[in-house]
Structure formats: C-alpha cells, structure tokens
Length: 128
Image (cartoon, rainbow, N blue to C red; front, top):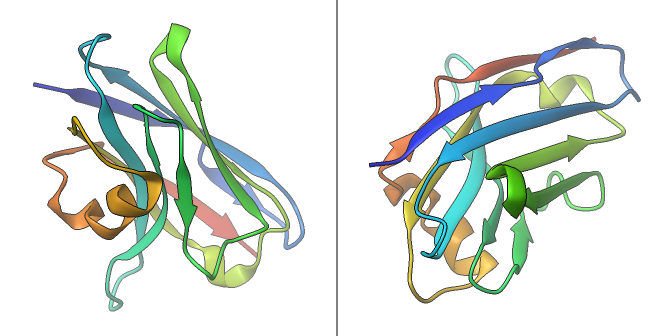
C-alpha cells in the first residue's frame, strides 16, 4: 500500500512559478510509476507528467512540456512538479498518483496514469 501526501499548491499570477511536492510511503527497493494529473470541474482529467523510478525517464503532456519539470528525490521519497511560466489554463486541482511498476518508462507511466492505484488528496493551483 502506498500513501501519498501532496503540498505546494496556491495562487500565483500568470508567468509565475509553483512547486508541488508529493511524499510517498513506498518500498525503497521497488520501482514505481509516479505522476501528476490535474482536473478542473466540468473538464476531463488531464495527465501532466510522469516518471518511472526504475530508470528515471520522464514524460510530459504537450501542454506543459518546456514549462513543467518532474523530478524525484529518492532520499526523501518525494516527487516534485516544478511549474514555471504558469498560465491561467493551468488552474486546476493537481493530484499525485503512483503504483509499483517493475518495467516501464516515463512514457509508459504517463500513458497509464489513470490506471495507477494510489492517489493523493489533491492540491489546488490557481493562476490569474
């Protein structure tokens, strides 16, 4: 069982930055898909970024590529989402997701974000 605790959301002006954190209670010896997706009321859930801890490869949605960076701190069991050059359309509730994955890649994890069994409580990001 994996527990995920997110933090770091808030309100920022367009062009600003925020960093989201997700602390995962997980087996340090296993490989995982870790990722972020976002949801706005009335819209479909959208994958944002993912990382496979086995190889460290990452993958991003086209809408955030070049602006967002997903990174892993193995010592702290934390996955970060650094969000730069934020736009009003980035406003959403952001969720961290995870699941054990022995073989994979960042792209595989991103494609299967909706299949990951463990999710955080969500953190609100508002860009005005």
